[in-house]
Amino acid sequence: MIDLHCHVLPGIDDGPETIEASIALARRAEESGVHTIIATPHVSWSYENDSETIARLVNEVNSAVASAGVTVEVLAGAEIAMTRCIDLPPTEVAALGLANGPWLLLECPFSSHLTGIQTLALELHEQGQRIILAHPERCPAFQHDPSLLESLVQEGLLTSVTAGSLVGRFGKTVRRFAHELMDAELVHNVASDAHDIDRRPPGMAAELEQAGFGSLSEWLTEQVPAAILAGQDAIPPRPRARHAKHPPGRRWRGFYSLRQAS
Image (cartoon, rainbow, N blue to C red; front, side):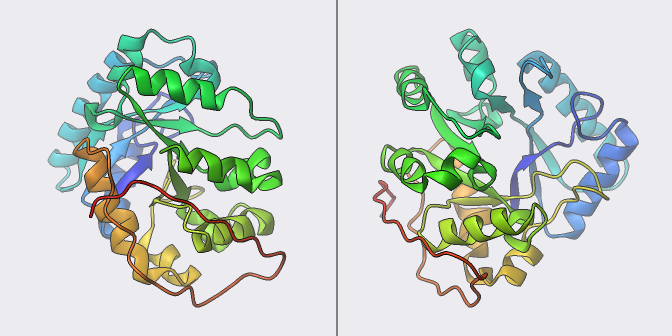
């Protein structure tokens, strides 16, 4: 599996504090079936990281992980706050792409208002960038108005849901909404968003299986991420699958059209 969203770099944000903790996280990821981790430290006003620092730490972590006998490969990336992205030079934004490619991981804000994202998406598209929205299931604005997320997907944005959301690690509301997005085919990737091995550990396959989406695991954690890391504009078509379990609560069903590889 490819973990597209993981805070594995040491001392740079709210992830591991030491290189030893980074090795432990990578080892746990390997044990869960992950072969590639995209290091996605926060790039925000709270964590003013830059591409040069991220690249240096990726090299250090890869060396330390290999020396420890862990075979996971770590690639550079970032989780960019929307409010920070608009103030970064285009060259720096491009340098923060996942695996140095055209896809950017943008952090959905934890607020009930979301303005300017369509404009930001258009500007980034004109610069040659593509957008993946990190943990939209945890964004109150999307919870209140799912059609807003649906419209963004129709415009070509992809979404990455945190595996823990599917099994209730962020509460019942987030779990229910994450399942609704999965049922509505508005999810294109599931990642760990891991920060450590205790509070926010790595893991994707077990959570997908527990949530009833095991049949989509390969598509969500291998095929789609591989297409993204290859810099492709289109993702593989979503396989047909049934969701075996539904959390109680309201039901919402949306429809979307996204250009996909045939």
